[in-house]
Amino acid sequence: RMQDARTTDVGIVPTHFAVIFDYSSKTFRHDLYPEYKANRSAPPEDLIPQFGLIRQATRAFNLPCVEMEGFEADDLIATYCRLAGEAGGDTTIIS
Image 1 (cartoon, rainbow, N blue to C red):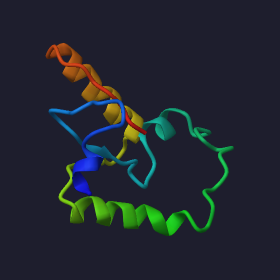
Image 2: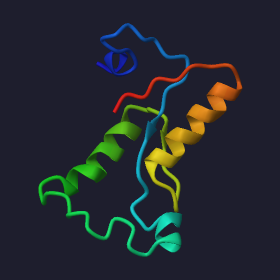
Image 3: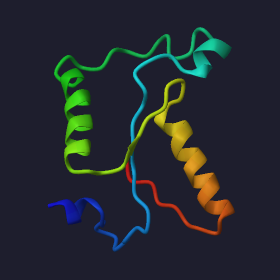
Image 4: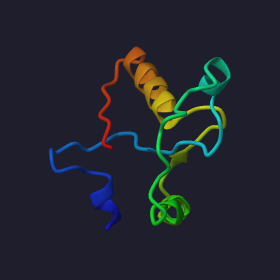
């Protein structure tokens, strides 16, 4: 149920909600440091098709989703958290 996706077991009821994805290309960090994530192993074969499916499901459920070329999800999450904090808000990251 969609309502379950917008509340948590710890009783948080968000005023704002977004699903944030990594963009599927190089980021600015690769330009700064070409060896960035060079030693990271590839994801399991059966996981790769799920990346597209979760994006489709997110959009099908009309959930706000964000991804930006050149940035990782962590960068976007940190930016949203900083902006919320500057506006006097609290943030909770559920990963």
